[in-house]
Length: 107
Image (cartoon, rainbow, N blue to C red; front, side):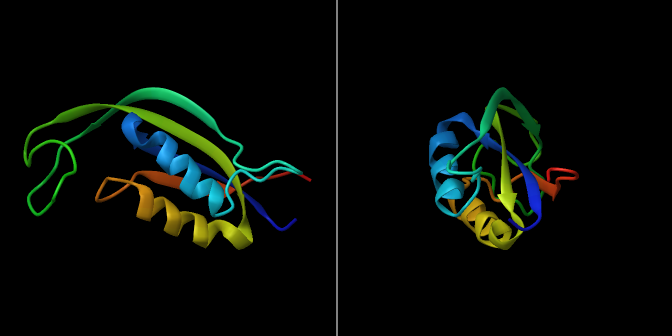
């Protein structure tokens, strides 16, 4: 397998299953003979939409809190672009919060 990346994304709890399916179908969470592997942790997302935004939740200029899930999984480098594309397509937020980085020493 090529270089492995860790992927973390935050999503409203109402969209967790949809997002897990989308990124898993695109190649995230493949470990050996398994697919769609992930770890999900509940939390609270906080943000304030600014002028020019079109928020999925909340109103411009007003702080917002929402029940969200943090999804963690791994992605092989060759699939990372397709996974990010699927993430953006399935995520309800205008600007989804996510990050990825290479996993050191996994092999």
